[in-house]
Amino acid sequence: MSIIEKIDLKVKEESKFYLDILAIKEWMEKNNTTKPPRCKSDNKAISEEEGNLGNQLRYIRANLIKPYNELDNEEEKEDYKIKHPELEEVIKIVEEIDRNNVRLKEDSTFYWNALKIKEWMEKNNTTKPPRNQYKSRKTGKNVVPIEEARLGDKLSEIRMNLISPYSRLETEKDKELYRMEHPELEEVLQIIEWIDNRIPEKLQQARDIKTWMKNKNTTNPPRATIRRNNKALRLKDMDEIEKEEYMLGTALRRIRTKLIDPYNKLETNEEKEEYKRNNPELLEVMEIVREIDRNNRKVEKNNLKQIVLKQKQNGLLGKNIEVESTFDEIFERIEHNLSNEQEI
Image (cartoon, rainbow, N blue to C red; front, side, top):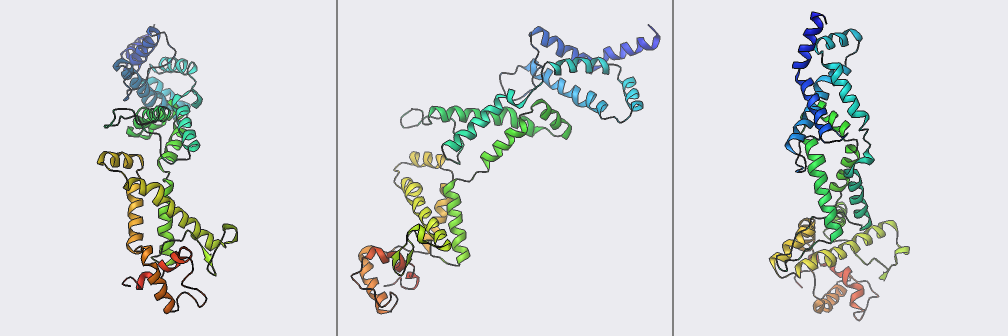
């Protein structure tokens, strides 16, 4: 062995890259596995030893192998090899690891769990992600159905053990390596973004109602019953403008009966807090509805006859409308004219 070869061998054996890759190989042989050590994360199943070796493998890829692969010409590569006599043997071990661990997104439980969560939300026609299990303070029993709770735990696991470690990476080099190690990452991120950006149906409807009123420059909410010539129209007989108002008016009615009324009927603070936790859109929806109601004070039906009489005297009901007409048929129409008649 020449002096130069002896020097190279000494440099190689003193290289941290070289010592680390040997430690990684030894760990894999000791654990009788072809899978490389995983990086440190919040996953408690990863031991400190494995986490440290996983981080070292990532460091080898990012700071020894990647810079070499990015060199443009052979001369630069030869210079790099001279500076790093350990390079070829380190690359050989890493390539062997990679040959035995060609990962596809389909190999990842994160990927399949994300798909199951999305499928569950679509099947249940909900914009709310599955919840984690918790117990009722009142009964001490589990509140969340078993399937939903299981998927809620899987969603937390995806956020904690796949996305959170990626988000904490500071350099693009580290992020690129992480994406190589986790081919499922991009698609899982898309699903999580889909989950997080979904607006609850009733909140979207409330916002649409508010926008509709603003565009119409009116404080009157959309009607759930559309009339033409004092006759209620069926949906198929409405024009596009009438259909839009009808759909929004029907949505407003459902918001009141299906979201707000059940909350108002709750008696204890614990029940109300649980309801708000399960319906995070509630507060914003209630504020929009309150704003609508502040500008549209409801009229008691027992006062309606007097209002009809006064409206008729003022010629606001049309010449052919009789006082004896069914009040329900003209109730909404009268409400729309009450902004200047509130002191009747």
